[in-house]
Length: 90
Length: 330
Image (cartoon, rainbow over all chains, first blue to last red; front, side, top):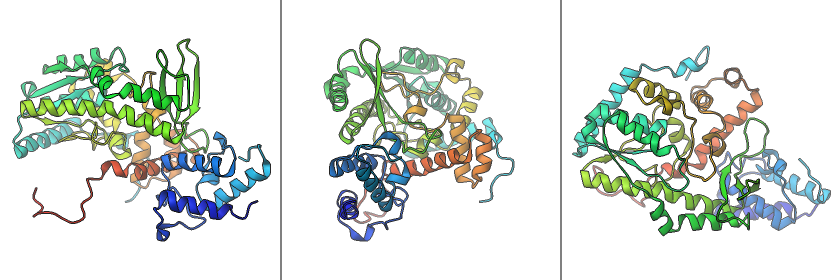
């Protein structure tokens, strides 16, 4: 796992959804959707970010809250994808 | 709020005549207040606009109601026949405004095709399409839009939408609701009438409308009624049976599209119950029994309700001002 994964994800959330406002940054375990950071368009943006930034392919079956709805979930998901290569992790 | 014991469809029962009287009073009071003379109703051939028109007729008489039929290329062939059945049944004047020419001129169809081509490069003349959401009841995947396309040979395929394709498709189709609203206000201005909006409670609450399109209106007479209740009023008011029996449709995409696959997670009679349960603290287990679903599926339905409320809050918001202006009485 790249040690930069959490930082890159937090930076993306901060710049793409929060206009750089650190005070609105959710905690690592908080739901990004329930806290109002992500809406359905935001999830699409997030998937495109994950695919381009980490060179992974997000399968439809993997678009579940456990993988995408918190910073911790995203870090685990990306790390598992990186370790698994092209294989799915859902 | 305490939850309702013995939860079921009966919680949506209404006294139709009492409800009609309440709405009619609101409609008449509104016209008096704004000094307008009647109502313009855009007729889609669906239940909501049909009931709205019938209520306006009850409020001010057929001579003060003006209907508009506004088909375009993606409209179902039966749309105009059904909307005419409404103006005929309730005996009010109406006009056909074909909007395909305006939509063509403003680039609606071209922009739509361009957006689809971002994910389906071969898309063009002779193809048809619609956007769809996955089922919320079958698994835990997030509800992300895909596009279903059908080539000229009838071969269908489904493709996940990229951000720019999704936004481009929505931005292009929103022209349809907005062009219709432009015409509604034209006729309202010409006649010194008010415009009506036709969302039911499900649509209004869940943000199933286009801002400054079908979401714009002077009065929304059925926005407080669950869809089940709108059907009950329709039957009570004498809306043609064919409209009462017709499945809900968006009538916006070139492939037929139900409201469930486009937006809502359940058929309307079940969605009504889910929304009621969400707002009346009905336990998920009780809702699950009423919907004949398991509890995890019901929890996903409730999650989807909350998510739609958050995502569409923007649609309800008035323009933001930096400070209050004037004495506040308009």
